[in-house]
Length: 462
Image (cartoon, rainbow, N blue to C red; front, top):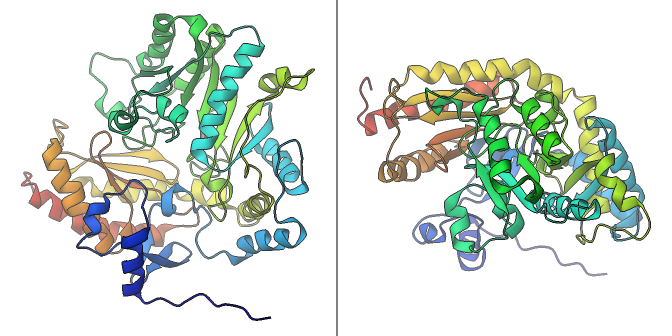
């Protein structure tokens, strides 16, 4: 039987086709009118290569997700092997062995009584599913008005309309308003910019105040990341999540730990809730569940949340065609085998202080104001003045981040995120297999570039 081999395109042909047909996510498409689009063609370990043969350190794990590194053909092979047996069947009223085995394995790793796993295709869908589950749970348990969700300012929880209502980034919300009603926001845990008159635990009490303001009978859930991504890796003060748990229990509000990024070793534990020792009612997860070798996400729910759906004619009236896809589930199982066999969590725990020290070593550069984060999830905040913590205005951020740092980081061989969804930061989230040699590679690129950025912004001491 004749087979058709895919065409081998030149880099120029790929650029032409990409600019004509491919619509990139969260990208200024007009910026590629007179410039090449980054096209990544190969990956191995902590590095990737573009169509021109240039090598880059993947300091963002693609998008916080290639946790075991690139090029693991053995993990991808698990999906191909599964396809020979059963390429696809749905989890809509049916089950199949890979999703059963994966659900059981996730439940064995999840904290407390989080024993029920609802699969999705990715992170936004996981958050959307958790918010819908919260609403229906409260209706089934006699609290039909508990529809509101409390999240934190600047937090990113996804792009679907329900998840976007929880997202606290104004310029991501504005183009799509009016949003799904019910999103309410409280201050985040930006301890670097905590007002002098505030105690860190006031940030937790703000949740109780907001519930009282909205009306306890109208608030269904609180959703928070263990370490907040947007704004630059905000970590919680000691006791913060324990107090959030108490508040949720007092007001009969569900606690959702959004761990699309923070689960599967990113913070050195399978789940961020374990890192900070709190027990949520639900965990949303994706990304590292397969180390991005296949698209998959999940909501992991407690037995208490599942209970009303296990009686009589009740059912969770929600579903996604590809949630629990057998090939993705097989890949996720193989990914978890790598975690266990190669001691991935131990590597993160051992080297977290080394990564932190490497980045803190940059604080002699005038533009570096703060280094924060946990595990392999770190941010460097950029400031105009280290002593006063003065930040840059919008025009300066545009020039600094998109006019200089982003293109120069890529040109010099480091993929990371230069972002100003809060104050300007550089975020780093390397594959969990990285170690001291890779950290030295990161700093070797960052140091001269940040020194040049200091001079470009005419900072004192540069």
